[in-house]
Length: 209
Ligand SMILES: N[C@@H](CCC(=O)N[C@@H](CS)C(=O)NCC(=O)O)C(=O)O
Image (cartoon, rainbow, N blue to C red; front, side, top):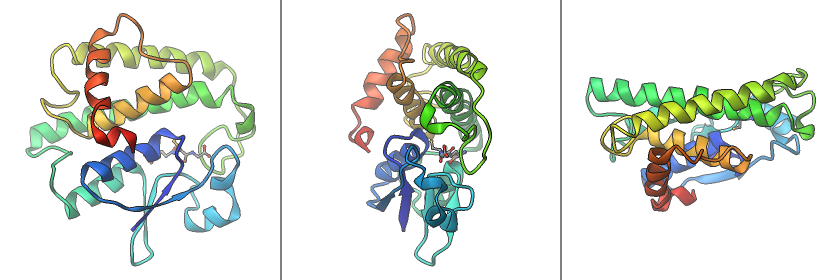
């Protein structure tokens, strides 16, 4: 197996942390997003969607989309369980995982992408050839603020985000928040539950992945 990756981007980091939590040491192939490599001919031959992460299996087939990679790895390497081990827990973990991708990573991405000159003409991930929309910078910031509020409230009730134990919901939220901090949307001072939880998840060895 090898993981098509980009070190600075939050979605591939979700996959790196997930693989590391499973104890899997997988070859990583770096593709720069900002330098346009993910939209270059060579990478589009591997993944015509032009996105990372993508997991290439030993038979040459490709799994795209982080949640699809999680499902595949969880089914083939069930321990430790990261997607929930009963239907109710799995549903709650998935709700927070999806929320953290859509209202966290995507919202912060909207904020970052639409003010980044290097991404001119790349309004969406992949070979979209769409204009940037400056108004989405402010909208992304507002969405990120809502994300922080929701996560802060939940973490006032539970130790981890989707369950009472570490799961994929925490991984995706952790990647969203570290990405947010890198683009100057760090944890708001009043979100003390987020700050408490962030210290705990950041202390896991896999946070370095
Ligand atoms: N829903 C996808 C999102 C993948 C995605 O958007 N990845 C970004 C990096 S964080 C990307 O490939 N960007 C390429 C680009 O901006 O052109 C997933 O879960 O894997």
